[in-house]
Image (tube, rainbow, N blue to C red; front, side, top):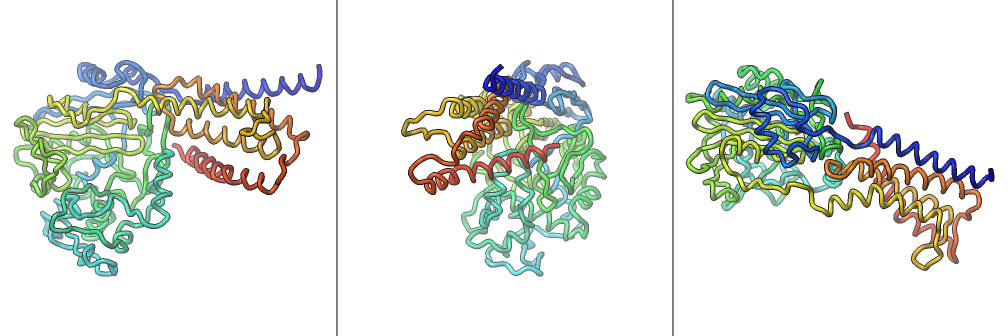
Length: 513
């Protein structure tokens, strides 16, 4: 056997081993309707409302509760991690549904006379110097009703683009955001104006949560526990102050087969980071809100404060946290939540009906399911049955196409103008580019609708490209061409950003639960 034949065998062996490893550990998820518990009839209704139906699709796990006066019906479908069946006690991320719990904490402090809706952040935080008097004049009511004229996130400085990069790659984008009150003090040119309308702001609610904690004299998790959760018996609702997930939690997924890092940042917990709950706990919360004579702190949150123009056809208003609709003669209060891998929806009507839908996939249409279970058509929340074809094509191209092209560039280097002859710089840049593309596809690809075998195929092609580059390395010059310095520059320009992206993606991958 010649040395070339031996090298080819090693290349093939590396490709096969990499493909098998990627297939064993790669993206896959059991069909969401394959595992069910709780009420069989409700589980069947929910399965019929999923865009995936009985297939794998984009959903992973779904927990549902329906409240009808004093009767609570629950059902759970799917898994916590793609293979472990979810149970009625599985906890899910709340996302922004946490805001109605934060608003309930506000209601408790209002009822106790510890805070007023007219109090300003400047008066409540006298130890801070605000850069803009208009920002200091923002009231508690404006924070709680999204009428403070604030952005959703503080977008100045280097933290925002880093947070967005983390979010887009499935990481904990909130982890690097600074203290929300400190961020607020530096803002200028924002704040309420005479014509300021409803404008959703996570920053506003983060400041509200920190403000309520200060007024109460205890940290936000403790204040929420003592004033809201414990009185209602919500024993499984928690606020994490460290990264990770509670025991036996539903791991968040961008789509089936694509896990993401849960959001955590204690300073932003009031908006729904690091906050977990069960459908049973939220059913208790909704039953208390929907009661004929709800507790005073909860009743305070349902008073309309401002018009929501986007829902004018529903006579939409905002209460303290709650969205308030008139849906075909039915008065309904609702809120939803979305992280980079979980969705939540909770709603109740004035005739003592309520629904909770929790999901650990960003592809599950929880609002559509929830409204349908209440008998309300909600075209506002229609979404495509499957991802856009461009997203599906990008997943295939990044996971398989890029490694295939890189391998081709190594084994059959062309001497055309648009493709430089192979040298050591190219032998590094081609596999690096392919590895970045492949890992990016693993992190954000639409694996709920693209066969996971393509991920394994891409891993095999990538391994073959690396092996071939290593085999040819001793015989290659460092650079080819008339101007080596220019070749080095043109190598560095794309490779350095790719290396940074590869590093970031690997860090996020290792941060997964």
